[in-house]
Image 1 (cartoon, rainbow, N blue to C red):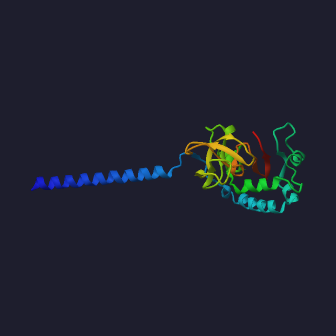
Image 2 (image 1 turned 90 degrees about the vertical axis):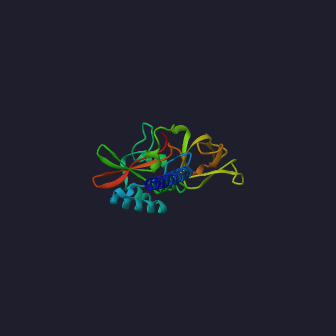
Image 3 (image 1 turned 135 degrees about the horizontal axis):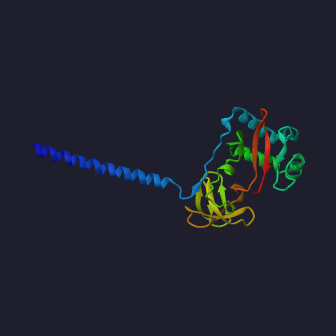
Length: 232
C-alpha cells in the first residue's frame, strides 16, 4: 500500500514538473517574441524632478507658439553658447546663428520640438541642468554616433523603397538604426538588427546625435538657456 502511494506521488510530481516546464517555455517564447531585435531608446522626460523647471518649461512652450522674442531674450544667459566657433558665445552670436527675429526662423519650431521630446536631469559642478531632447544625453556610448540615428515614434514604418506606396518591411518603436544614405530628399536609407533588409524612412522622424539641443541652468534662482547648439 505504501509503495502504491509513493508511486502515485512520484507520478503526480512528474506531471507537475512537466507542466511547469512547458509553462516556463511558453512564457520564455512569448517574452522573446515581444522583444524587438533592434536597440531602442525609449522616451524619457525628467522635467518633473524640478517643479520650478516644469513650470518654466510649460511657459516656454507657450512662448514658442507666440514667437515672443522679448520673452525669449529675458531667459537667455549673456554667455549663451550657440556654436563651436571661437565667437560662438554671447547674445549677439546667438542672434546671428539662430535668427529668432526673422519671420520664417527655424528656431521656434526647433525649440518647441526639443522641449516636447523630453528632457533629462543632469548634474554638473554641483549644478542641476536639464538637457532636451532626452536622446542627446541618453544616446548609448557604445554606438558610433556618426552613422546611427534614433527613429522617433511608435510603429514607424520602414519602406522597401523611398515611396509610401512600396512595401512596408517593418514597423519599429524608437529604434536606433544605422544610416546607409541620406537621399533622396526627405528620406533616409537605414538598416539594423531586427530589420529583414535595408529600407527607407522619413527624415522628419529621425534624430542624429549632432542635431540641435538645448541646455537649461538655474542661476541665482532663475532658469535660463545656457546652450543652444547643433553639431558635434
